[in-house]
Image (cartoon, rainbow, N blue to C red; front, top):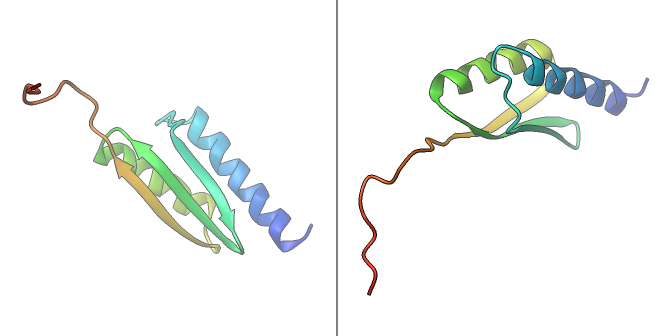
Length: 84
C-alpha cells in the first residue's frame, strides 16, 4: 500500500465512522490535498463540530490534516425582509 493509498484508506474509515457514529454527520467531507487530509463542511452546532474534530483526530492521528468546518444554525430569520 502506497502512502497516498494509506491516507485514502484512513479518510474512508473516518467518513464511515462519521456517517454511522454518534454525530451521524453527512455534511462533512474529507479530501486529500497532496499528502494532507482536509476535513471540511458544515455542522449544526459547536458540540457537533467538537465531536467531528475528536473523531478526525482519532482516525487521522499521525497524519498531516486540518479542518475547515463551519457551524450553520438553520432556523427562521430573526427579522423580516423589506421588499421595494
